[in-house]
Image (tube, rainbow over all chains, first blue to last red; front, side, top):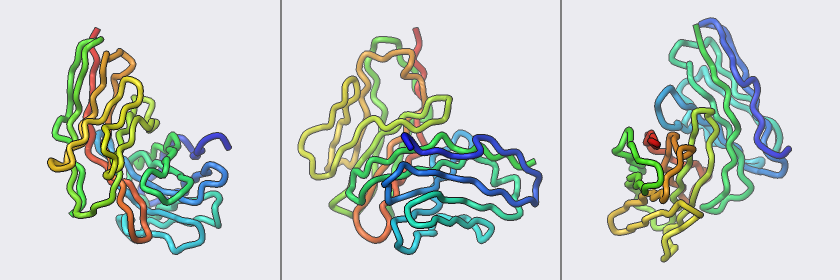
Length: 115
Length: 116
């Protein structure tokens, strides 16, 4: 597609429920990233996928968080047993190459509210 | 430790004036990249400008320029002739070469308000 697409744009869920967030990267972009942005704060790295390599999961805050990506296509970020501190905007980005200026393109994010 | 520091939580500037947003970084790597992103209230992240650590000249993109001082590890963003539409959150970020990850490390941001 023309840009990085994320769905849903907004999600309200009850504490303890599982949620699944989706990211559709730009076609041909081999790298995909998930970030979390809490209200009024900067972007916190969660996970990185590069082609068929093993993902870098070093930013996932707990084992309740997991993400999958099949090849160079769609990625899903799953949060199990959601807690109120999970409330944030979850941003996805994709990029074409692995140079230093690898032209991140961000999606519009999913705003997650846990009540 | 690799870190980006933005010490200005908020800034005001009069329309048509220039403003400098501060950014310092910490890394022991010799090869890295520095970015500035704009995030308006709509939430999207808009790429503004990029500076490579080996670039000798400061990057410029229209009204944006990056004041790169490598010895001081600073990468300040200068916006000339501010416009009302420049009001937004601005993030400085750093990319690092090496390893399996090319993630961007972000600062905490500076909220810029342009006053008429």
